[in-house]
Image (cartoon, rainbow, N blue to C red; front, side):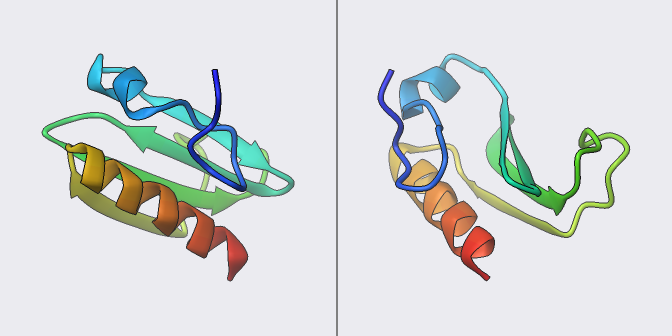
Length: 81
């Protein structure tokens, strides 16, 4: 399955449209995409799971293909900082 990100291995919109959550990491940067009425993206540094980690960044996005594209860009930008 090709990734929609230049930085992370994130599946396409239809994976999330089916109601799935997704988490991943690159180096010490970890993130989770949570499905709901809107997409919620959270990010932190370290190897702890999202339930135990101190969340450093979070943002909500429309649950649409455009909202998903904005979420991926937000993750890439957050990682780059």
